[in-house]
Image 1: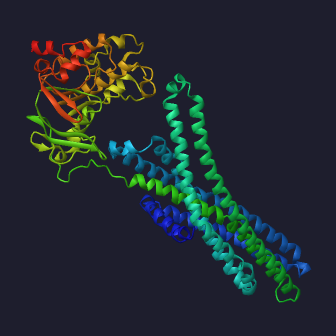
Image 2: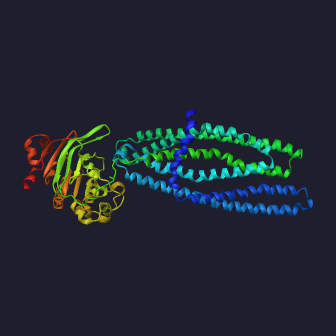
Length: 590
């Protein structure tokens, strides 16, 4: 507890320092807000002085009535001015907070788009979404209400205390004497508030993650009658979040009475000592009224100190979570002297390629060469590294230097945008956006959308859709079958007419009838494209020049389908299980 108390405030300030770049161009807005707050408090501070003059006029009965009316009118005008200026001060500052929230959200989104798959493998979607919503809300509250309340408190305290000292220094000391108790209490619990705020946000992120998983797997949950189990898991996560929030509320609830006690003690001291001073005529009644008015103005800023502290600690905790994303760096980075490339003229070469997820090796000593225009099939056991091999080529995963070469140049030294623009990539799991079929296909680049759909074997499916290519696919393509989603994704890969085509199990969700249709259409689209196709169906390799067989991250066999069948090894075993010729018929036709 002591360690947190001494380190948390400094830690919070250092975390909030990361917000400074987002204030660029908004410092003038906040300065204007401060000036408006100064004007607002000036109007409020004039009221006790006018009350003082009004009370002093009561000692002159003849002039009291006209003076009272005049002072009442002035107080009413000041109240109107106070309200008007206060509206503008709040608007200026809170609008600035919205702009900062907008900038941080843009920076977060841009950072997430830069990060590679290794980052998303270890992060939860619900947690990321929580940082975009809950944590950003805390930052907005801090940069809006938090800064506004802090500035207002500083201005009001500085002005009111100075005016109180001018009236009676001793009475001012008595009024402020209980404040050290409040300061010590706040300092003692500030570290705990930061810790609880961080834990609360993390528990809320877990709740969001549970909800996101449940929504995504709603059909699976229902099909296995696991509604009760998921509901119980959500209840446990929600209870943990509730416990953290209640702990934070109790801590804040402890601070507020302490602040109220300090404020009340100061008011009692003023009433007692001030009353005696007025009775002894050591202080005029008007001064006492003015002093009491200034002290009353300090009651709300003092009470709101606990809220300000909570805003700053919660904002600091949220900024710590946001900073983790902003500070994240992709393992795949642009080379400082990246070389431009516009086509594949010679070959794609793999030289002793190794790759591991953490400490788990996936690919080991992979070496082979793919000539420009050559079509290579890749098969093997589940988990042998086939999909990983494809993802390394467009640098979706980080490959070490000196392992993958394009026309003799290490891909890590090529311009990343140029490299990926040459590649059409079909992932194993087809991802579609909640838009039309045409928009999903056009995402692959500029090209002939109907032609790409035809090559992917979508023609017969489109005839069954009333709106054809303009059919909305729903969230993640929910209105399409698995095979239709796969073919839309394939059309997207073909859309840009790539030089290098990477197909990761393109026939996985396709029935036998569409398989032959797609392969026939693709054979007409190969042209001079270099192709690497991963598939568990050996029939997919009928147009491939060579096939690689992977096992435990190594190439255990390679050759034409006919050659591999003659070896009687792994490829032959797979062919027997599938009851196919292993693509040999297609190879013989060539």
